Amino acid sequence: MSHTDTPFAPLPRPQGSDGTDRRVGVEIEFAGLTEDATATLVRAELGGDIHRDATHDLHVSGTELGTVKIVLDTALRRLGDAGPVDKVLDALRGLIPVEIVTDPLTRDQLVRLDTFRDTLRRNGAVGTTDGVLLGFGVHLNVSITDTHDPFTWQTVLAFALMQGWLRRRMPIDGTRRLMPFVAPWPDAFVTELAHIGPTPTCDAVRDLYAQHCNSRNHALDLLPIFRHADTEAFDRLFPNQSNTKGRPAFHFRLPDCRIDDAAWSLNLEWQRWRLVELLAADADALSALTRKRRAWAAQTAAGRPGWTDVVQEVLGTDWAALTR
Image (spheres, rainbow, N blue to C red):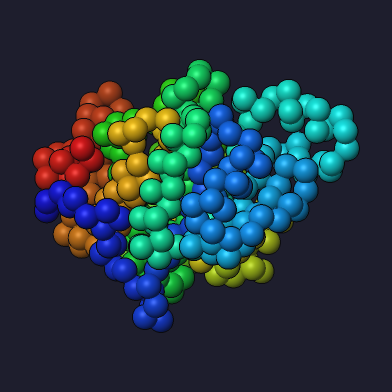
């Protein structure tokens, strides 16, 4: 296994079960620019027409990336456009991120978005490292191959097994670690998932997930997939998630937004996700790590190494090199 310098290198399974290319929706949170200024930059560089949906919500249609939404990312804006709410939002503007939300994008469009990301930086956009209270992130909505494809659920297993290793190799900002939005999956869930084996099914993962993870505030949010796969089962198992919309895509919430860092890029975060799918596609490595997890969990806590050390031992230096 070797490092690739290809921007947004293909996933090991680049097409879905229907033969179409898998796409990726992107959400970018940042401060330093208003919604209107951001929309103006989108139109200037990517084309399209600006539309205002609410005081703090806009979208630009007909761009090179399709429709691009620009919103002030807070639950307060959903209370309406009343004057007091707008005054609060304006007062907190430096702490509440503006968020860009794209349609599902092709690889070429991802490259184009990464170029535009640098335009935002040069015009004053700042990310999570600009201030101690700015815990801003990037979300990747990676379309799955199919809910019935074992690879989808092997990807879930791969992420569960390597989540701590990813956090150690590619640390997220301390502010975001303290926030509840990117919590790791519980150890008990990871161990029980490993006991299912290297070929879990949608139903098995969903039922187990419902026992351990009842919110969307995890580094990998699976609730949109579960609703998409079986709405009736979803409503029964996750009764407090009625606002979750179904979507056949992984919701990868872990990455920081470091948009004010000239050395940072969306491609770096893409490579982080790609590592997960590379493990899912490597049957030998995934099986070995699954067995190691079961054996590790059977040991007493005092007599075993840290799990991330075990992952590093199994994956070796080639995998570690991919995080540089």
